[in-house]
Image 1 (cartoon, rainbow, N blue to C red):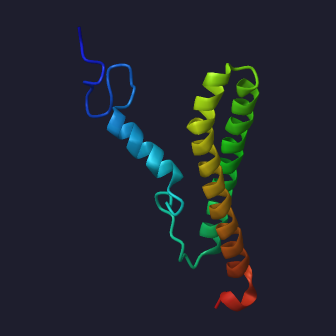
Image 2 (image 1 turned 30 degrees about the vertical axis):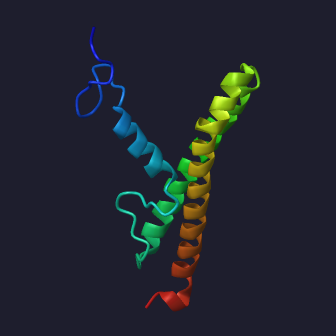
Image 3 (image 1 turned 120 degrees about the vertical axis):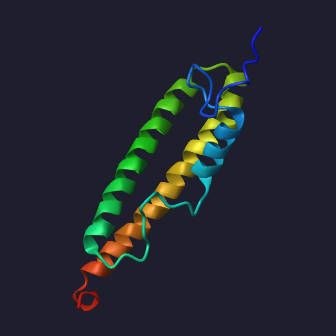
Length: 121
């Protein structure tokens, strides 16, 4: 019998991540101050700020759609399953959505400030 936890560095042959990799991903997902790759909060460029507004708006829309689908499924699930989903998956999805909302608001504000005539030399 093979050990189901003995996968390669990127998970096992089924593409399932190893436990440590999954834990790291979950922690990264809910880290409130985590920035995306390439995100520079001090950018002096309006185009950059507008790009991040678009990115975070799309991520937030995606996360909200996942939450809506999850809520639909929870309505027809067994009580024990609902408890598990609400303790784990829903908390992670909500935390991610909240982070995306905060980042979106940051970038909207940054874009407004960069668009002001006084901030452009």
